[in-house]
Length: 202
Image 1 (cartoon, rainbow, N blue to C red):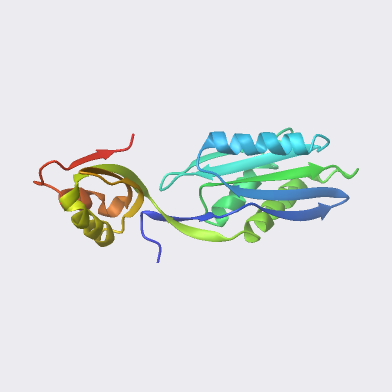
Image 2: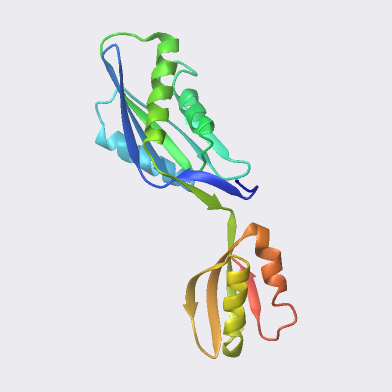
């Protein structure tokens, strides 16, 4: 069961290949967490494939209201970017980008043929990947006296937190990731304790 603060994404880069009337469509899927990251990868694909006829792409980032983007990159309107985005939506994935690289094969496919080719190449690239369930979380910085560290460890375990880094001393500083659904309970567990400071990362 997927909880409201959980969603699925991909774990690595993957590729697919599809041919139609001589044209070659290579789908490339990769995980991203920001639009700038997607644009960086697309720039790299453009440099790697300078003779490609078109490189069309789409991304879906965030949850539960994902940011979406798609581009036809010179293909007829609605024939490339949107079918790629539909493939991502149909797989119910987020935090991922899919590009389809087309090398023209000498025969026109028509809009319906392009839609089919771009969507199938994108879907096949996603199918070739490995998915993982992610949880929406927030990072905290916790400054805590040394004698209270064991209490911190117990509350992290209780509220599904993970310690990302720690600097232990008389006053110790921990960087912790906590799922959104347990965040307020975790913070409340330290209410009233002297010299404990919890700061949310901006």
